[in-house]
Image 1 (spheres, each protein chain N blue to C red):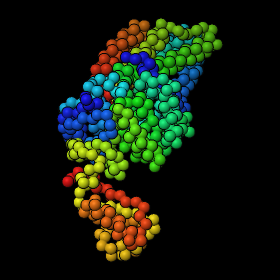
Image 2: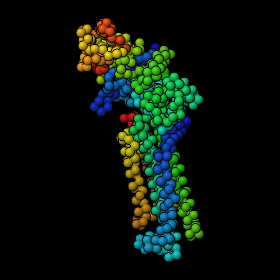
Image 3: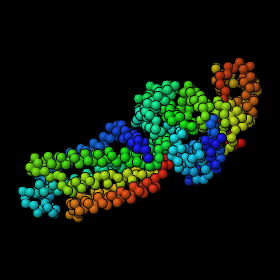
Image 4: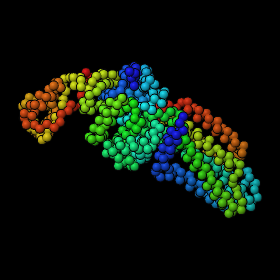
Length: 260
Length: 301
């Protein structure tokens, strides 16, 4: 495998993605805007609504807090258990969008033929495409976590004179990002032979977000605790799923899937 | 001499459709034209040669290698497909540099080839333009340029002149002739008789996915045989009634005067006598051509 060809292909795909602000703007702008906006909302709720929410929903750690600490507890809880899972959906959505464009897009735009007519091997083709989807996704999500973490800390220090982040759970959520990003890419590779275009590929991979969205709700309802043990098991599970899906996609991918 | 491309009873099906059916043919250095109507399997054959499709049965070898399994075999091959297949949001130079890199060509060398070729085709000024802003013809020029970047020993061209202006089309034709004389195998796919008759080369006729004939371009008119229609264009409109009186079997032509007529002939040798009669009637002839769908008719014969 020639690394230069892999990098050329990944660079080409990235150049296409970043060629127009109308393509990459919404893809990266909206998550990053949320990274700045949601912590502010969480602070507002923590100050004004925490006691009433804590009274309505029995969340351990908040309901049992002394009234003076309810807001701090809520801010910490919200920042990790609610915002964390929301930001964990970002790598899934972003990698699904880029991978769908990268694989199904070649098919839809009929640009695959000269690519496949080149001496590029199957491994180089897959590696280049996966790299192009994986790298910007991980970078963007890490940036989103950094922005949201910094803003949470800034606000909490201003209000409560203490830093809420990072915690072990929060760091594990950040650590799960590469594993979350890889699964949709493998799925796009798997389904690339069966979809006609980008939209179909995106729709199918976006379904992956659904299980992750259960996390904040189950946390709110007290059904799951996003603690170190839970997140460690989640990462291990994701790693196993990733290995399985990646192996399956490598084994089943046929280059002519991008043509027919 | 070993053939550059050897195809032995190759078949490719798409569900119920047989795209190519037990084709056996070999290609050596030189120009080979592959002619056939729509759906004859011309493009599929090229894609199978490139290793883009896995054939269902038979064998294809390019430089002794299986192009579907051996990716390195494509280092010495190139395909210009019937759609330009360029990346719209990249510039022309980015497109060409990218493909050059896939063949291990230095960016400077890619640029040198691109500048030379695009200058010949009057498209050099588009080097920094985004592909989406270009016309269909210009895109085809860029795609042609891309196909020759790696100086392929086997160059496969699918309708390379379809959208080109006259001078660029002529450049491509001359390129094919010269390049094929330099020890390279050029496969030129077309469905236009007009294109075929400009060359003196090998001619392979495909029909319904099978080899209908392996002949020479100069034998094409014999193959066309009897009962064809030719289109004759005049420099100025001619009175149809007057031409009918010359004994020509004119098809259609309801109007009194016309700048072109369609005449039925029984043999290609009748063209000369037809033209003589027209000239004696005072017609200034500017163009004569066989009318499609002569190709479909020919393959049925």
